[in-house]
Length: 130
Image 1 (tube, one colour):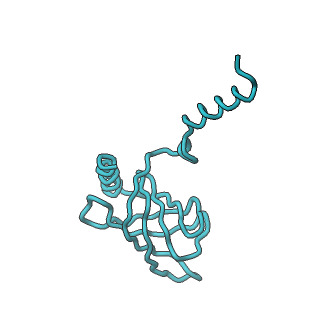
Image 2: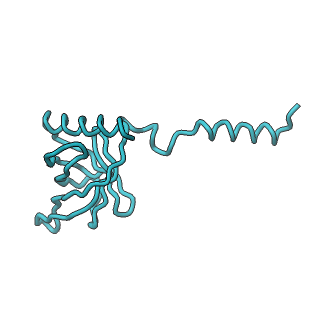
Image 3: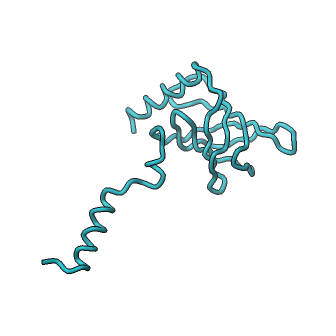
């Protein structure tokens, strides 16, 4: 017969082996790792400003982007990115949904059918190689 500490230890082991990565249970779409340069058009003191950064994750609905600027949650921007397995850059409108230091979670908005098709093609191709 197991004592309380042994049962507690087994419960912790079994629950941790089935653990879901932080935030994964909230995801609408799978994320794929990318490492591509991006350009973002932001507003700085009311004036348009182009900044260069890097995208690190991509999903059907958005991306993670490292940008060397201070953005706030809810801020709008335009992103120009050449996605993996795509020959032409895609220009999409996005909104900042979350932030960790200078890494921003961007949600795509007002996407055309053509833009969505390109993003989905890139995600499908990334799913095959990751």
